[in-house]
Length: 156
Image 1 (cartoon, rainbow, N blue to C red):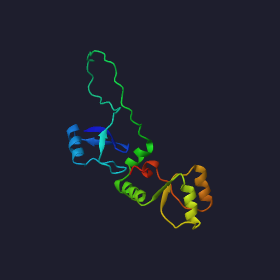
Image 2: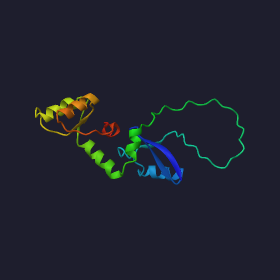
Image 3: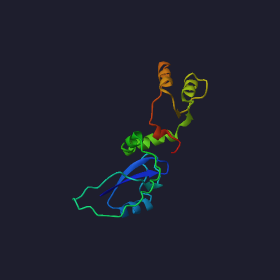
Image 4: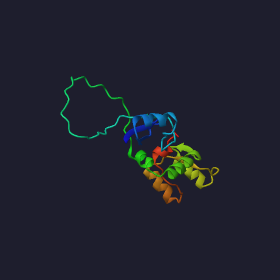
């Protein structure tokens, strides 16, 4: 069994377990390897810090070479790993919620108030609110829930 650190074209990081590197290549070619966060099939391997430990061997002498610079890749965040470890039916439901909501971004608190006080027609929205804005919404009796940023990003 081989474990690869993978990422979709939207930058969601996750790991995949395969029988071999050929098995990964075959499954990826048939779009069977998909992002657990956004369902993207454009998957690539990332650099991994995993080390396989086997039987001790004598070190092999090799000529020293200048280290090549590693490509810049964003470090995976804990929320993405948390989402990737959720049951598939929960991730699917979260994706459905995101697809069926309007992203109002930083205007979330303002738009939630307008909807709550019937200043605009009711609609499903998502966005970002500071901790202070969220507390004010709760104090006003405005219902909302928090979702991880990796689920609510526009990359889906």
